[in-house]
Length: 107
Length: 468
Image (cartoon, rainbow over all chains, first blue to last red; front, side):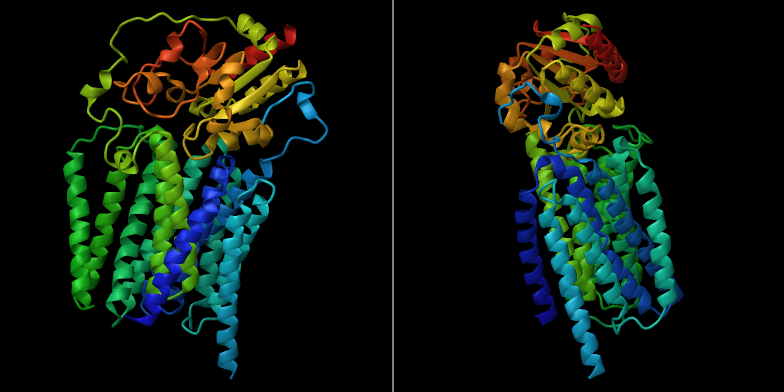
């Protein structure tokens, strides 16, 4: 077997496990930002499109790869902006009692 | 010597980029650090992009690459800043589709350009193209459904199962032929056809899946885009893509499993058969014409029982998003809190149209996240609660899921609203929920119904609570 390919296989198996471990720790509150952040991360295909575009010789390949870069970049930037907008809104209760003074809460 | 320096810079840059992506997911595990996580993810990708420009493989088209990045960035940025929070599920679906389509384009472009490569690379290209294409059109259909462009459940003029089977069969068969053939003009044409079949399959697979199943579907599509990115990494031999894609793939599958479990269904049953897929089986309970008693309540009376309660739990559902009532519910809650009422929110895992949908909406309305409780953390507290306010939620509160083994939703974990002293349900009308199952809760003598648009009803409640 091609050693590059074998390395890739090892890397992907380890990454899959790592992914599960990392995601398990994310609370349900953050599931939507998590999805859009992973969305942003999958926009990394952008790099692949860049490589194909930068090494292409035929115009139809260049067109496809150009579109690939456009879509990948849109995925990255859009995913980032949307995630940031959402995360900006998440806030903790203001310290010092806040609006629920008087009501005891059990956790 | 210079070339070695360049290689070292490239390898190190990619390594740092991978570390940033991994740490970013780690940071996303707490609301306090999540924003940093998002910046790290962006930073990791920006670094990867810069490093990629220095690859020896890239020897031309630099201007085109930069132009494409600028155009794509603008295409992503503008709608992302404008979209309403209630429309977040379809926005995420759309961006996800972009990534999938990019992977499909890369697969085709790369295959058209290659001369002679190993079978492994061909396999990665074929799978990456197929999975990216399914994710692209699947996400497009999910977007259209969430945006209301096509109905949640649509009848097709042709036999969907047959056409789906043909498109998947054609895709698999052609893909296999591409794998077996030497790389030549014929196999290149066949790869294009394979990807086209996959595009059709993506549409047909998502088309029959209804609105309430969307959280599972969106998470799965997210995962598919990740997997296609990882396969692109295999094909082009860049490990950053393999790591990043596999992380996303694992996360998406894991999320969709959480969602499916919260509906007591398997992922397969979500994809291959929906509730009441055949119209004859969906008539259980709902729409049989039998009038069953419900108790209506006026906004005044509802406001009085809320204002004099000690403990109130709010149960939001998709109806809250539809009515854009997140700010109104926050206003009502803070009015009640001013009077000393303990107000908390109970969030069912599949409330809304994507994982965590309700949490984002309520965060937009300034509800602190420590007031939002996951099902398992709050379910035992319903019995100690005076009033539960159900807003646009239905199936996730139906006691039949616990008590009635003949119910289609039997076994689905529910919020135990019926254990509270009383419940007030804000609802448009008496239509049944997504599953087409009548909700026993609405006929419970402890339950009173406040009909009307959720936002309007909440407005009346706020006025009345202030007047109490």
